[in-house]
Image (cartoon, rainbow, N blue to C red; front, side, top):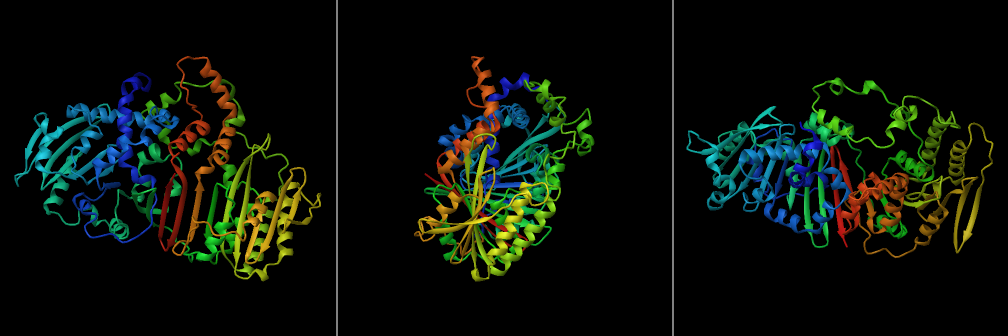
Amino acid sequence: MFQPIVFRKYLRPKVLTAIALALLLCLGLIVYAKTSRGGRGAYSLAEDFPRGALVYAQFRDLPALVKQWDESSLKQQYLNSANYHQLQHRHLALKLAARLEEFSDALGFPLDTSIITDTADASAACAVYDIGRLDIVFIAPLGEERAAATMFFQNSGQFEETELPDGTTYYRHEVEADRGRQKQEIVFATLKGRFVLATNEQLFLRSLSNINGRTRRDRLSDDSSFKTLSAELPPHFATVWVDQAKLNEDWYFKHYWLMQNVEQFRGIRASMFDLEIEDGKWIERRDFLTVGRDVNKRSAIESDDAQRMQAMIPDGVPFFRLQSVGHDTAQAASLIRDTLLDRLPTTEDRDNNDWDWQSYDGGYFNSSYEDEDATSERYSSLDEDYDSMIDDPHDARVSRREEPGANPLAVEMETQFASRLQQVIEVAHPMAMATATSPQTSAAPLFVEFRRVAILTLQNPAGLNLEALENAVSDAAQSRLTVAGKSVDLKWVSHNEVGQSWRSLDLPVLGWQLCYALRDHELIVANSSELLAATLANHNAPVPSHAHSLSQTNDLTVIRLDQRKQAFDEVLGRLDTEAAERQARAHNAHENSVSTSDEFFSGNISSLLDVASSVSRIEIRRSSATNRLHEEIVFILK
């Protein structure tokens, strides 16, 4: 498209504008939702849009949304973040800025958020039909007097005027986009109290036909997935519908927006997102239509069980999750295994560590490849590790080496452990489970220890065979410590301190303990005796005020951002320690260097946490049914 180094300084203000517009359009793409029934006419704007959109977004009050963003501390925090400083130099941001510049040049005035908000009295909607071409339709109710005052009509003399047989007049201007490789149009008009703007003339004319009521079944609201989802989810501050099945096949979506995790979206056919703002919290809802397989519907967690398990979670734990087990005892066994022992890498994980030229399609080797400018940017500033790492076979991932000391029977023994654990748990009839994680930084070489505890509510605790449970865990731990055979004698030990009793299995050399306790209807397992003791101390504690009743939910996840220092900052800092020290030395050698860390974890990710500093906790609820998934996230503000 263009050389980023040459145009970067010129396009930097345009990058900010492009990102702001993209954020407005994609506001609902980062939020989650749950279902409820909407009112009639809530999606009336969708009736004006043609079918075939990839993404549709509507806003209850677009001018208010833009004003709130411009005046918010959130905006300034983000603009000062390392994430934004890095994003504005990325190929995607530069490409959006260049396209925005081309449209602005064609219009004769800058196409920014203030211009767009002037075209809406309050509500507005837009839809994207082609990501690569940026084929977009924007429609907003607008009075004639305000329409005449917009920059579009004030500069209408620069446009080609066309009158339709019904007397409707619209204005059109051709645009040479993408360095002249694409021919597009900017088309606008007012019709029946609506302002209509599009970058594709055919989509524009189809929109006019819908407004005039001259077409049948060419309305976005006629799409079956849109009808299904809009009937369940009432719109609030901002709402977005996504045809995920089409996006999964879109080249630009996979290469520019989604990168490598396309397969994670294969099971989604369509989704709708909604954002509601209340005093002290933001509520984000999402409703999914899934494909490929039926979701295993589980009963909701009993209210008493949910509140009791939440009360047992120690206050300093930054992350916990409550799940309904239902009849899925295999999942319950897996959660216990993952609490006690670190998961072994699968065959697929190991294969992904090896570079393979066949994983690239022919487009990557084509001289006319769409991203030639991105490729040049990638190699425009090689760091000091390039010469030392380019020929390193480990870094190039061209060699397959077995890890020294790995147990050749580890996978088989892991499978046996899961099977035995499931048999033990199944007899006790598990109903619900809570898992919690507390990261603790450690001295080298352990780096960081993830302390974990799991609380399993049992319908029949008397049926739990504790001896079989101990033997299964002991054998699994044995397989992690030796190459083959039982060269270490592991023994379970009873403890009784401060009125609390439990059993533990000490792992030699490492200083780790696997432990458990049975209290009434709860089996509690942990990989840390300190975390287990803290959980047991809360067993009879009063239910906290923030504990939830999950009568309609089978899954609750809570992230406590007020525990950020322990859970995130210390861990992320360790990830980037060496690189950050090297960068600091480089910054000190240059007066004009950027003071913000550019490292991915301690810089980029931490800066996003800084942006979210006003959020004290995040609560995520999920419920599922056949081919449906509903989610809701609540951001609780400080």
